[in-house]
Length: 279
Length: 179
Image 1 (tube, rainbow over the protein chains, first blue to last red):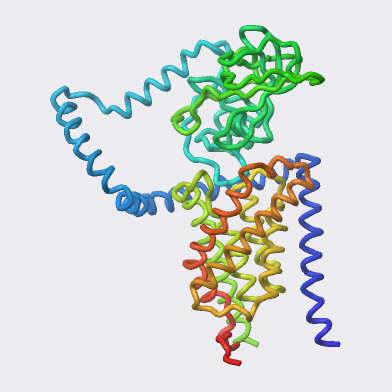
Image 2 (cartoon, rainbow over the protein chains, first blue to last red):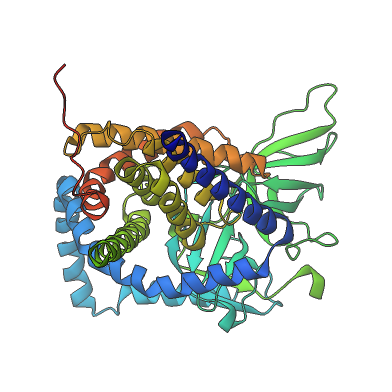
């Protein structure tokens, strides 16, 4: 009896854990629980300094390892940098990185789109530590007037929307995330469709386009801004890279589009303080 | 009783330390260890190692805690999705407690890699049940494979740490037995 009890007890523990988890998952999934959101946001705020310290400690090590693996490239790059340094010294230029940053911030303040909407400029701090979400972390949060759902743009166009915002940082869900959809309009023809993310580093999948729509390769896509849209209108989203002809019997057309923003090289983004409800 | 209590406090402190180290490693690895945009799931690897070290009963709870930490700090999917996955992985690994020979790096690598691959598959399956079916995509096999390999490699570092923190010193460790 004792043996039977000790062997079945862990199964009860597992059952208890599963039931607890399923309850919380259901609450969070259906109710969008603010308690869980607050706990998450507080935990992330608390962990951020520790994570930063750990990263700063590890960075020299990983840089050294990277240097070992890329010795040939580094040797070549080193020679180039020496030449570049001499040029820079003779010209007495200012810090190039600082100038790049300033230019990017300046460009963000003078965008040709969404320039009548208030926004907060934030620095991209991290890639999201997950294999299933296309997301980035930025260094501004609710203390700076950012809220969940706000659209995020960069110099090229639409980046995504705020998925989570704690006091000092936020997570931006990129438009390439497979759970994100964007209402779009084709600039040339005016046709509308829905662009959906296909995962990290992959093109957008645009569907719900009328079957007789005039859509061609290289057409530009902008946000449609239709009623109750999550994004303001006329923000550039991408360019059509593949527009196959519909087959007979198809009820809609489907095309592929490449996002305009290079997500891997963003330094700064602008969070638009805009939501559909307030418009 | 006092001695037992002292031992359990020490074990608790060590356990917290292990989970803390794994959390920091996850944060660091996410920024510095990326292969084809895939990052290791250190807390999943830790759950598997804990299960192998302490068995299914304690493993299920510690795996659950590791998953909660991952849910809180690193993910935006519904809370406790990872917790239930990691608990299950730790439970299953716990069933094999005693069959793993500590100090055999190849075996630690292999078992953690397989457990991590299964863990990712479970996570994606449970996610699909809650409406996150998009995780099943063409990239999934690559993610499963690379997470398995990376977790296996990290297990070589974490294995001794978990063993130091959680292995029962008065219970003889398994040895390769000649039949």
